[in-house]
Length: 423
Image (cartoon, rainbow, N blue to C red; front, side, top):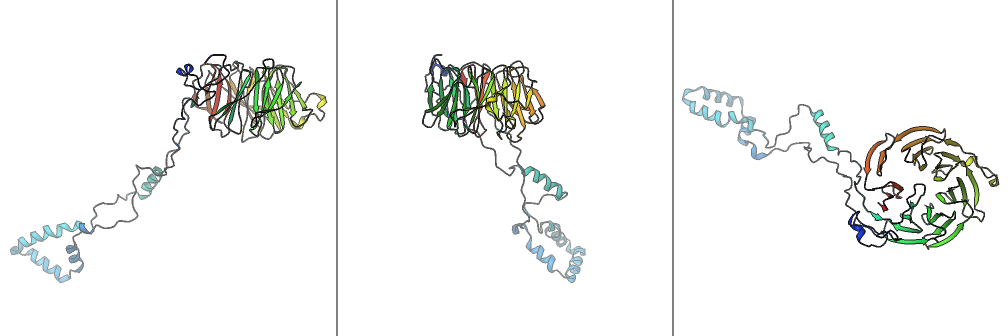
């Protein structure tokens, strides 16, 4: 596609560029992913019944009857006959046909296993019957690759988000696109005026219906995506572009290049209700904790701040609120922020190219719990927590990965890179 196009077309990384497609159309069918096996038996394990049924055709019924009914006199007569030289032929015949054939009595065609160690055999059989633990299926290539022309190559912006309604929003230049992951359909929400653009940040509200868009002009737009209607525009919040956004119920928190962080209550006319000021450079990362009690902010000044709502000033006009923690361990801009979903006071942060570290923090005490140098080079890496062992590396991007977003069910991640592809 030509670089000036505002549409997104899907395709496989090499030949697709020559074929024009509708924006964000699915490149191909989803590859089959086999489900985890639910088989509870090991087909190689032998299975034996709890008893054996004799095969009557394998038994000598005449000999069995004779041995059960013979009397003492019969035994003495048989011994006498056997000792008689004149009866040598009879004795030999009796031995061949009867006495040497007693092993056939109660014989079975299928003999049971040797019972020398029943307990050990049962234990081995029980272990063999259990299926091997299945590892998570992780594909080694992208399920879809979409062309993303005009994607702004700026590490400090936040141009992609995946909402709770399973709709992915991505800004390409001055245009905001919506891609419905359930149906694969694409729509264009808005193209902002050139004087206001480009779009510099985007964030879905928790309801998955309302979308906040930050602009280079410092304005913030609120959209109802169900009706494609602009609800309101917040002006005068910042002095320059708005590069980061985060929702906390009805509060939209905005971070600007001016270093200011502002809480905006979108329900009221005078929306700016609180200001956090602690960064000396652009605020490039914002994330509220799951409880809504703490806010993490990262800036181009390499600083990480933790703000607590209990410390917020009761007078918005005071202009500033004191941070709970000011953390200076990162050696580059702090953009990547993620709160642990099962431990409210655990925060993970990622530093820029001169840092490359993932750090884990106890936000109650401000202690750094762990730091891992990722050595990232244009790939996505899946880590196992808390061991931080690499589970997989997802390659395909040929330039640095700028933006990532996770699907609502937590099973899929979308990434957009400076190579102008979305995977």
